[in-house]
Length: 226
Image 1 (cartoon, rainbow, N blue to C red):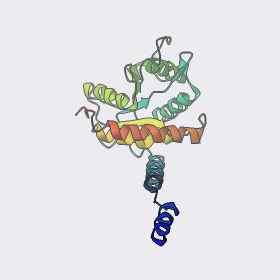
Image 2 (cartoon, one colour):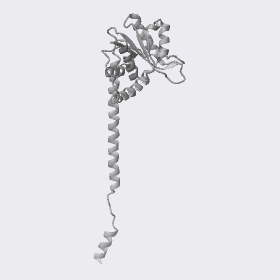
Image 3 (cartoon, rainbow, N blue to C red):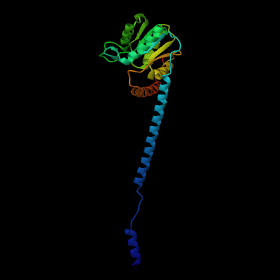
Image 4 (cartoon, rainbow, N blue to C red):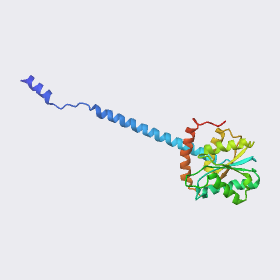
């Protein structure tokens, strides 16, 4: 009888079996949290690095005369330069008027099929209104990116025997433009950097962070044009 009671007690007593699925799920949650935290930290470090690069670009400045200025295009509004593009063109004209360069290459293709003018054509019209003779303006009408702006403009320079260039753009854009120019083999490019008064600085720097990141990945597979 005692043996039977012991057996029944063994059979009916509480059984504590570890739930392996719960432990496994907990481990995966911890790993997922660590991975997410690592990705966020990596993203923060990368963003900081790009922002530092962008900040360094704002210190670029023209320190010697050049054969030509390359004005990087931006959007037209109703076939005329947008307020932001006018900032670049005004900066380019100021250097031209001082005698820092005797000619200008305006670079930019067609924004969209509805436009009548390419960016370059709209820029040329604006510069002529400021007083730059048509003979001193060279048009590059095909570029759709900063890389193409500088690649196609360099080809125009080579065709005309021009060796040195001043690159005209905005301050936030200077670092990426410098990196692309170096990639394309520009000879000690100078920079004319327009202030950013017509654009939201924080939104602009945010977009530039993405654009700079894309460029750094793209240039591993792009031809340097040399």
